[in-house]
Image 1: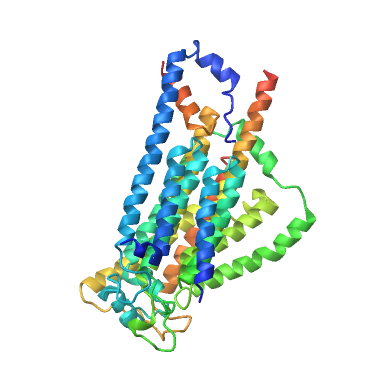
Image 2: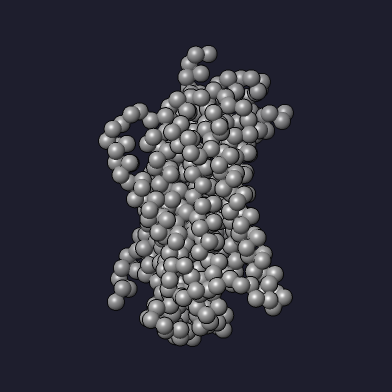
Length: 89
Length: 280
Length: 124
């Protein structure tokens, strides 16, 4: 009964994982990873474990992605600073 | 970012008096190619072996699988009488296997300590001041009013998830992460300077110490009395009520506080400079 | 023999995801990408465990209506194990990202090869 949506979501997981591996842009791969986590949390509901769904939605999708984004931003800032230093010297 | 970037000029000149020879370069390239081929081959072989194993596993979703042995049967049949929690998973991880969860909370603490040491173990340098100047948000009325509306609701939902952990889906980890997310939203709209009024590094230390000490002492008491066949005198209450299931509710609250503050500290340490959580 | 691969589609997809995560971890020279690969492999292992605990037609392991029969609920043990694992994986991610930020401060690159080159030159 719910098999078709399971097949669609599982196929999406594989495609998203390949896209993360192949993406040239780091920001794009982090965004795809966030969507990957959302789909995994829907799969926990289909596997009837709502505890996991809530935890994955809060931790995997929320906190992990925020950490990745923040680190990326910090590295961009440091890169910018370095370029300015290079220009001055 | 993934495109090969030139190594910064001053570093190059100061540390490398000579240019790398051609042979070295070619050797490195050959090594890289060999490494890639071997890595892909190893992965393919591993996946093939694992898929062959999957082909011999018992069929998915059948009731007679060997994983469904007497242990989960015991948790389901005796769980409500022994732990008082209607959520079998909560009763399992915070009562039967509470020691496991204690270790998990300690891993979280160890990770937080490592991040603290790595990102704030040095005096603030030029990067840190620049980061702090850049990251302090401008006074955006729409953003701030929306956040003012959203933060209490998210926090309320997190508190609900923590408090209802023994009755339905939820618990300390998920609820703590939701509360941490609301704190992060507040800090990223209003700036850490405002958040620092109620949350500093010393607050974090106190919260973590109190939660871990409470967890250790409470579960140590229960394990001690249980091992010596004594009565622990902790009432289990009526299963299904909010104030029931003995120690699971306070332990959930302790774990939730710990997780929420750890997630917030992670965010602050990564986004702001090194001394952003310190007292002014 | 290979019929069970299609019956156990959750496990099959979990193994494939694990392989993709491992390839990302091994092949990419970018450190942040490596950590994302590690997270994919983590999710794959959790998917495998959860699929082992699922039983068709049974409900969530939350006792309702006083029914305490084993045949009414799925296996709760994998759920508990995965709950532990998710929090551990976020701790490991945070630790690894902190290491990456420190390395970037030192070497000014995210690429592992460039980092090794600079480190080699420093030793000479």
